[in-house]
Length: 201
Image 1 (tube, rainbow, N blue to C red):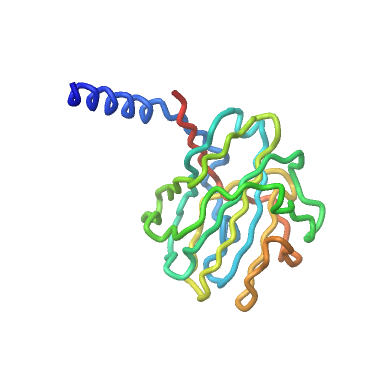
Image 2 (cartoon, helix red, strand yellow):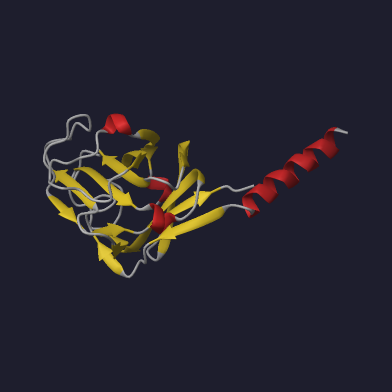
């Protein structure tokens, strides 16, 4: 009986994984350096907005992926904290127009070094806390990278989204306080492509 129940559980888990639904936002034909993190610089904080029309799916996001295009390493750029949140905005009006972290949910904290694939593949991150996306609001994805060393250049797969869809900050000396971030280095329409994995059942 125990073996029979174990078999049922294994089949159910297998079916759940087969039914996972992946949404890809953006192509990967444009190389980007600043999103999700600028690996040459020691400390990073970025926020990117993806619209509900780009995502077009509702449900619990259990994993996200960024595309490693070419070059580089995450040896000195691997300590990440990731936040997600529902927002009305699809753009940022200035370099100080960060979405307050109090409005976001921390979904991951840890090293992504073991997740980093060779060039030409997606880097998958399983979220510590799945995020229940409503597909009514837009989605903001924020990444705080805090490994205190210079790194090697990594080119991420990206695409051109709406004007001012992303904010990025980096510095070799100052690790930004996400509760009170300094002015961004820039506002960009070019974002990192992202895959959102919904474990639909």
